[in-house]
Image (cartoon, rainbow, N blue to C red; front, side, top):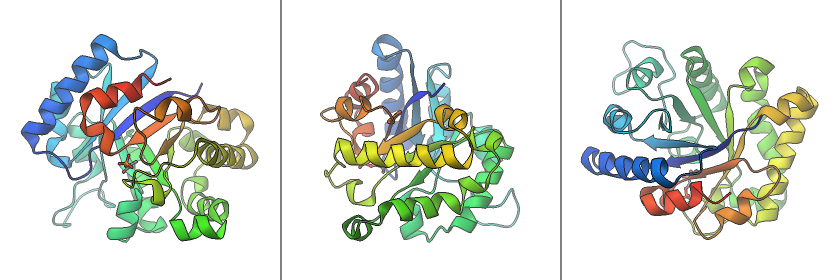
Length: 252
Ligand code: PEP
């Protein structure tokens, strides 16, 4: 069965102290008021992972890194491997975020290595895809997203694909305050689910959680999450305020 998931992406924000305070506030709110059937994930900077994992109740709040190294270990100065991420208590890894693809030139080839290492360590990848504004304006967003998936997660066998959470995040909606319309988000997620059904099977498609991300907020989450193919959200800005994040968790 598809899980409902609300995952925060803190990006490059908060000191460790601020992050732990934020995580504690989210944890408290989730334990006292959070919808029980929603999986909650906090995507923190690498430096915060251990402290945040220690500060939350792991049975209700999961921790994610926002990236990982494309190598298992070795002479890769400044990199953080998946086994290091795992050793902090984190259980998810956000991969292929558009900011990493755009600013750090992450390619499908690199992402395939990261996906393989993440799955090998039994952490859950949250695999991001999504088109730029020019592609949306040209009307070729479906082909573009299909290609992103064909070159990466669709190369995996069904049993591995089933361990992945997909997040569709149109780049033009990330951090801009411009949310995709509910219909645009639903249409793309239905398209992705249809691709999975035709490439794998409808059973596989029905098991995979697909999230929407891009200026999701307490004001629009309810409408987005009411759509048949939207299984939750990847939340940037609004995940930095515990009360807003809770409202999104409870928006179903
Ligand atoms: C994100 O970065 O994944 C994101 C969705 O950001 P925001 O919610 O701020 O648009």
